[in-house]
Image 1 (cartoon, rainbow, N blue to C red):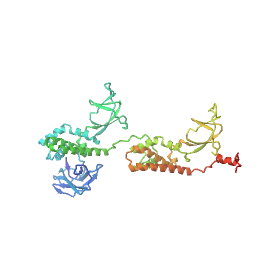
Image 2 (cartoon, rainbow, N blue to C red):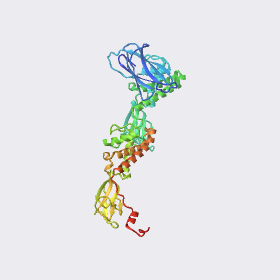
Image 3 (cartoon, one colour):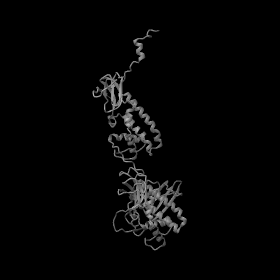
Image 4 (cartoon, rainbow, N blue to C red):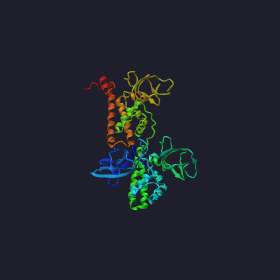
Length: 497
């Protein structure tokens, strides 16, 4: 690959312990830039990645045309074990341009030389150098090395989505539709039945270049053929290809290194797949079907805080944990809580006159139609102050039957179902804890300690909500019991000593 003076070089390296496993050093790492074996004062920027032990780096190539550029890695592993490694990058050239930057664009020669480095063989000077080892590398490359590596690592940069609609019906077997795979298809990543890529298809077959499915239209997520687009490869995928070439080459020229290089290949694939996972979630959340308003956002964030998860910043956030909270809310959670307890804050009183359109053939003489917005009935009374409860009545379907009219109803209306701004704080906190409790089993990111504490916090919030609601209601008159009335009004035994 070309190294132009004055431009920015971007690269990647990893650190491994004595067993060959990726390891984060106890101190370091540091990189020193060398030209012709002499250290320079070039500043190197090192960044961590999501994979422990894997780092990216960048620096401006020194103004030393014709010099051999290399970097030396230094770090100390746990246990005060020092490590050092030198990587030869190539000869610095004059680009003929001022400034600018370029990424670590791979070339076939660079990949070949990296494979030779792993095998312990001498580097090639060019892609056409007449050496036996180059012919062997060409043979491995032409056998589809890059395409095989695409199937192994399934890198994110090579993934595409294609809508397959031109299905052919078949009667040769029970799976009804045959789809022709795209011409650039290399490997299947996932298959879906909907355009939002929510509903994954698990029953399918591949046969004779066809995809067999029970759906006439499917959405294929697949690895496209980037085997010739070397400049599009990420540095981690370049390492997969060079490790594979080295493994296959060792079988031809150095069999004793085959096992070690097989391990190197497996680790390169693992790193590449880990970095690709950072580019998109490993499990894509289902598209939310619940439209949130801003008044719901604090309740969702309260539930997330109880679960020990990061809060939402917008009402359009479609995180997986948000979808689980949606599912809990959509299970008529608020309706269940409002119906479970006689909440004073949500109760209203109305007068109901008899409905002459409802006839009674027997029994009670008057029929009253229930309010359409009734969620929970808390009492039927004969007087407007609701001091004399109506004891003799029938509650049947959408009507109440009685000998008395008018009657007065205390009930909870359904307007409180979707109006969090009308709830007192203690009820809003109770709803949030109930949402968290229902969603918790479906959210694997919740820490065990938060799972254990959640149910205790939920019980505390429930008891607090009920206690505060009761304390804010007016005092109730306690009616005299039948035994006390009997003693006050007299009876057969009233005068006994």
